[in-house]
Image 1 (cartoon, helix red, strand yellow):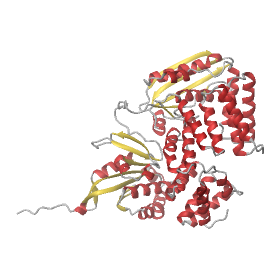
Image 2 (cartoon, helix red, strand yellow):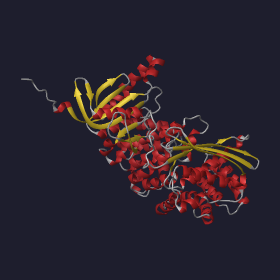
Image 3 (tube, one colour):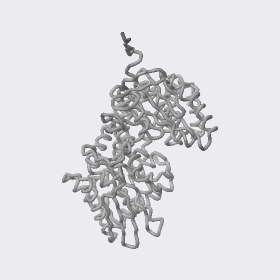
Image 4 (tube, one colour):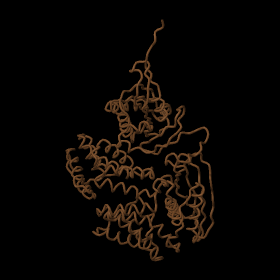
Length: 583
C-alpha cells in the first residue's frame, strides 16, 4: 500500500504577495560593492523591514536584489508598498520596483510559488523605478479610499500569464511591457497624444516664446476634441531641450502618439515642420512641412490639427470642427504680443517683473486689436496672480481681474481659458456653485482642460465632501503626469479633511518631493502628524518649514482658504496643536 501525501491547508492558500527588487542592482554592485552593501543593510534595518512589520507582512524570501513578502490582506500589502516607496524618495543609491497581486500560493520547503507569485513577479518587472503596480484582482479587494490613489486599469498580456491582467499604478502612468513584435493598437482604448515643444530654429533665441506659443495653440486645439486624451503643456514641455526616445515619452506620459516639430521664423515668413509618431514603436505615421506667410499662421495650425485628427481616425462633431477653425484675431502682430504675454504669465518665474512684462504685452495686443478677446483674459490671469502674490499691495486685484475676464467673455463667450479664470476668481470669493458652473462651461468647450478638471476637484475638497474631489484630481494628474504635483497636494488635503491621516501624509510627502519649496503641504502634513500622535516627525517638518519660510504662519495661511465648512478649519488647526507646536 502506497502512502498518499495530501497538501495541508497551511501549505496552500490565498495570499497577498508583494514582490520588490532593486533597480540596477548588478551595476551598483559592479561600480561600488562596499557602498551598495552598506546602503542595502541600512535600507533593510531602518526602512524596509520595520515598515513590513508595521503592516503585518511576512518576508518569505530575501534574495540579494529583492524580496517576496506575504500579507494577510491586500490593503496591508498596498499601504506597505506606498510607505516604502515614499520613504525612498530622494535616496541617492537604492530605488525599488514593486508588484502586488492576490492569488493562490503554495509553500514547499523554503520556496513559494503559484499564481499569486507569478503575477506579482511580472508586475514587479514591469514597474518603473519608484513605482507600485497592482493587478485588477487586487484593486477589487481594496477599499475605495486606497483604490482612488491608483490610475490606469488597461488590460495587458503579461509573459506566461494566460489571461490579460488589468494593471493599476501608483504614482506614475502605466508602462507598457515590451513585446518582440509590435502589437495592434487596442481599438477600444481612448486615443491619446502628447505635443512636445516645437524646436525654435530661428536665428534669434528670443523667438522661443513664438515656437512655444504655437505649440500651446496646437495643444489647445487638440484639447477641444472630446474623444482624444491630450497631455497638458506643463507635462509635455518637461522634455523641452532634451534628447528623448519617443517610446520612452509615450510610456512616461501614458500616450499612444507623440507630435514633435520645429518652427523657423524669418521676417514675415514661417516654416513649420511636424511629425506624428506612434509612441509604441517609434514609427512615423505622418509628416508635413509648411512654408507660409505669418498671416497664414492660424490656417497652418488648423491644418496641422485636422491632419492629426485624420491620422488618428477620429470623427469630429460639427461643433468641434467649428471650434478648431476659429480665428481669434486677424492681426498677426497682436497675436505675437499675446503669445509673449501668455509665456510670461505662465512662467514659473513668479516675480513682479514678470507680472509687469505680462501687463505690457497684453495691453499692447489690445492696442493693436481692441476686439481680440484673449489678451483681456491674459490681463485677468495676471491680476489673479497679483492677488495671490500681493506685488502691488492693492486690495482690489480680484476686481481688476474679474473686469478683464468679463470683457474677454463678452468678446468671445466660447473661450475655455476665460471661463477657467472666472472659476478661479469665484473660488477665491467663496462662490463655489458659480465657480463650478464656470468650470463646467470651460470643460464643455475643452474636455481635456487639465487645470479646469483639477479646479473642479479642488472645489469639492473645499466644499465639505473632500473625497468627492479625488476622481477629478486623478484625471487632472493623468493629463499632467509630469507636472501635476499641485493635484497631489489637494489629494493629500482631501484625505486629511476626510480623517485618513496616514494617506494624507503619503500624498504630502509625494508633493514635497516634487516641489521641495512648498510651505502649505508641510503645514498640512504637520496637522496630519499631530492627529496621528507622531509629534517628533511633526517637529522635524516644522524645522524644514521654518528654513523655507521663516515668517510662515499656518493659521494665517489656512485661514485664507475658502473652506465651506468651518469645522474643517478647526480640524486643521487642532492637528497642529496636537503636534505640540505653536503657530
